[in-house]
Image (cartoon, rainbow, N blue to C red; front, side):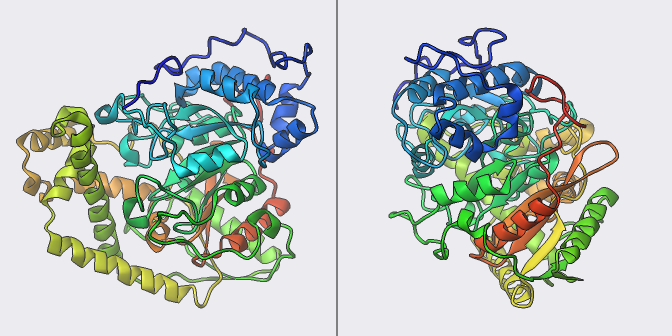
Length: 539
């Protein structure tokens, strides 16, 4: 394992930038380019790349602006947890590929996708000091697109919770309200974009981890079709194919262009997504088509009801879609929710158990309770104590759900739902406390997984997570493209996303619909109260 020297430290620091400066001098130019904070905020990632192409700003100057912004707001947000300034400055001053995002500053999530020579720790003590020796294929494609990666963002340990408050790094705060969660697991990425540090950041989605933070932070979050983006070269699939990698953005076109840059077959993959007809960015310019759209607010995972704010967001979105000429009617796919909830939980637990076992080769010993957080250890206990027959039974149940949903989409082009079940929550809302935590810790120390089946020991924690996010996991299981669109803010000034899901492989159609919504109801104007620009924005 190679050593990593001089490019990161915890907490991340940005000491190489003079306080109060906007852009540094363009290397070798002998002059400064005057680009104001407002101009930086007025452009999305493609817009910044266009400025670079026209010679109005250099990649090095954009990078220094992003570092300045991180220095300004990251101490309040804790969104970026690994700094890569040395690597980024070397890259920005060198010859960058002529990709669609040439020179645009970028952040990657500290999970799953490796950047050679930079720690990949999954927000876990278990992998502290893990440094990959080669790039992931997705990283290679980001770099070929011209992006300049200058840091890695926070997430919950192993991406388990739909909030971002790991013990290793500490919680990431929501730019819309400090002390509240930005969602998870790509919470650090979402907070970085919402706070104006970067226009686009990498994330992953194994149960909603792009769409949940998008909803909580007022962003556009798109989960592509299964196997649309690569996951290799070290693995053939992640989380049974449920997980997908992509980006969080402020505009639909950035997301589409990013997928154009990264999508495509990987030579060592087990399977590939169906090839699209043309580019995803190109699809945004196609004439709108009239779609048959179903909508529901009934949760897929929990037996409760969506919060009134989240229901209202869907009702407003349904009215907007009708006004845009689409046929909209109430309907939902029919399947056994209990089997789906149990099956998803057992698959999640199995993955955690496998991660703990795989870590033995890195640690040189079996994983111990003190290596990971309590919830991680408990899920690992469930995973390794589930017999093969039970696991395969519930795997078949998930296949039944997938077939039922596929049948539903034979009658509908798109399904509209809330993204999550309630507005953003304060830190600590979803974790065990007091007696519940104490009993869980006792079971963990006793190593008695059978006790977790007792009422109240683990089911309360699972119910809390499912109540917060009862919609997104369904489309990780089915592999369909699914997006959270920021159309609603509640009376407390917190963003509430609505989710749109299309048929398997129809990413372009979903992008086109989201672009139509964006044109009708622009969502770029709102700015979070905690923002890296010179003056506070709208709340």
